[in-house]
Image 1 (cartoon, rainbow, N blue to C red):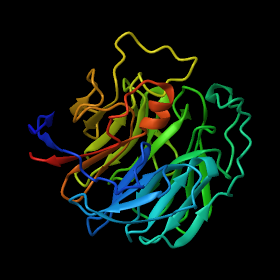
Image 2 (image 1 turned 90 degrees about the vertical axis):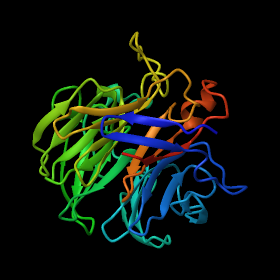
Image 3 (image 1 turned 45 degrees about the vertical axis):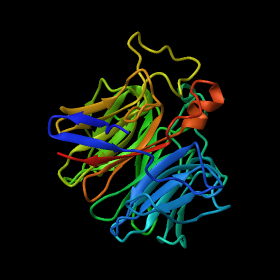
Image 4 (image 1 turned 120 degrees about the horizontal axis):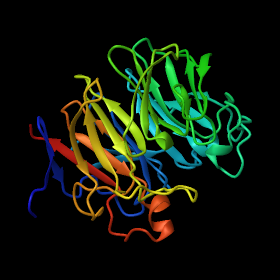
Length: 331
């Protein structure tokens, strides 16, 4: 097979063919999130019967846990002590686990959502920022001081800040398009200067805040960003869903609508590299519904997709698409 390279400028990668093959009975078309620990193990959070599947860096299966514990996998993040934070949007909770699956803490109340006034899952009908408890939370980020930030989410328009031991400290945000408002805050990350980045998906922008929620800046012109990862050099990796997957019935895609892509920005919002957005989302290095991105200690990139919920269930995609891709850094 011919090697496929992607990227540009100082960011060049090679696609690893068929990385991370699931053993029989573990396959899943909806991979919501991926993260790696200090030992290089890769944790794949998915919506199958084995929610947390673990691989080594070469893609060899190591094991799984979480069976029967989750309603709907959405996000997984690693803490500085290698603890794992799993966001279950349909359970309205975020749970902290040890690397081998022992529950340490839960934020939110299972099955209990805050009252935001939303009607029929239409984020345009949210009347107020609620919670916690959450209403379909989407992601969590750990700040340098150990505090936790939760993006909340599909049926809310808030960010919540918790102490490391789970005490609510502060919340901000409301529905809308103005600075500090959100329409589906979907991903969240924190840079080395302790600034909070929120992927404001349906406003097609990234908003940047202080730890206390003060609005600092925004980057516009993105195509429905879903997740943000900021590496040790403060390069900002963003998955963009694009306008051909997961489109709500009331949305009208722009004339130049593309499939999803991965973009790399500097801290000023300058685009450094981008790939994807081609006409064949099943091709190596292309994307249909990119949902999460992670960069490991070696600088290699992982991107996962929710093909079933965004594609197969709507007859938008053939079943030979890829749910997880690894890109090895070559420059």
